[in-house]
Image (cartoon, rainbow, N blue to C red; front, side, top):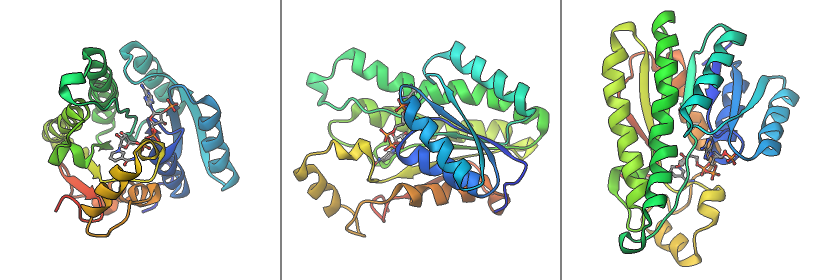
Length: 247
Ligand code: NAP
């Protein structure tokens, strides 16, 4: 899976799944840009863990929901590195509520970060990857985007949108062998699932054939595979990393 000489951008790399993805890509030899929004210290911690393990990384703060800030970030990466080989759209938020209580601002915030954020980075990455005639984009969707989930109309819509975006972009970029895939994690142990009530955790586990939540590292391994030449004939796919939940 050697990723030596590759430049990778991981959005939302400060915590949770994104941090493990950044560490795993760096362990394979990639130079990793760790994007974050609010958690500067956590992003610097990710960078320092990568450097302590002998890898190369830098932190870059900007909201993926802000198109101008994303443009500036992409320009800086290309100016410094001269290329972008791997883009992992991992930044994501939840604002859960039943639809009768769902505020429009919560619907919009989730769509703006999870779906439009993915659109913003993909636009600039695609331009660079088309020039290079190579690249791999991995979008982190969710089992909620595949199966739906009560209380998550905004989140599930954003993650289903990410799957549609992934497949359409895979078709647009296929002639240059630029690969675009999605990963649909099930319940993964992070700050995002830490917020769940005990009853929601038990209800979640009862739907998972493995009977347990996944670990961020287990998602990161799937990302490394899709980023690597081992996945050279795979595009437009949604890989479930969910302990069998969505089968
Ligand atoms: P998390 O622990 O809450 O971390 C979210 C990450 O996204 C943080 O690094 C956060 O950065 C970043 N982020 C949020 N808004 C951002 C923005 N506007 N711009 C840039 N970065 C932003 O979540 P997680 O569980 O690791 O989830 C990571 C991804 O996996 C998300 O897309 C999520 O939807 C998806 N997912 C998670 C699960 C799960 O069970 N955990 C299941 C399926 C899918 P800051 O802290 O710097 O703001």
